[in-house]
Image (spheres, rainbow, N blue to C red):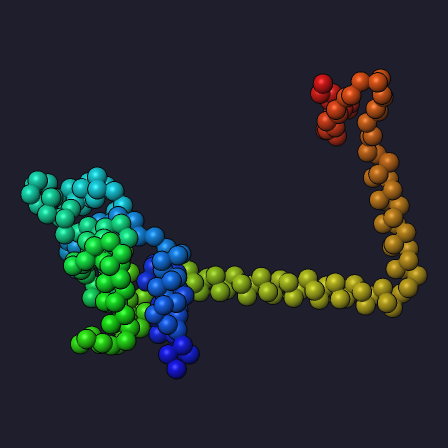
Length: 240
């Protein structure tokens, strides 16, 4: 039954794949994705909510703290660099979108990677005191809203409606073109002589165009010559 419901979902931002087993989910994230060393800002925004700015370089994150949050004291910056850091392939710390915070791992190496999967699996399955959750409840690392809310916001945005409208307009245009072609074919079917005359005229115009194309004059002198022909000029260009 679990495979049919596909309760596991990829936790990476741009991937929406779901899986029926823990092994399939782990295999996918291990082979298709790579966790870079990351810093996620946990400062509160003036308008409310977490900043959630994601930086992939230590210096960039320091500049963000100074510019956007006026954090310049060495001790404060050093503390932020430590608590906001997510290690490469989630070593030392990892982001849990169900807990909406960075968690510290007690193990190292491949065992730390396994510890991360086990923790998220507890959320998917509702084990060890965790409420059972769906991937739509997952808060991406660069957001303070669950995936489900972000998808709903996108589907109800004005841009989405405009795209839908333009798609309909395109369909109407195609339908009009198809109707016009159908009308032309019907007219030819009613007047076969007119259709034959039209075909002769098109063949004649095509022949005139072919006669106007200048063909390069090539002479052989015994040596090997490579010609690069450009119809924009009157004569071909020789490359020796």
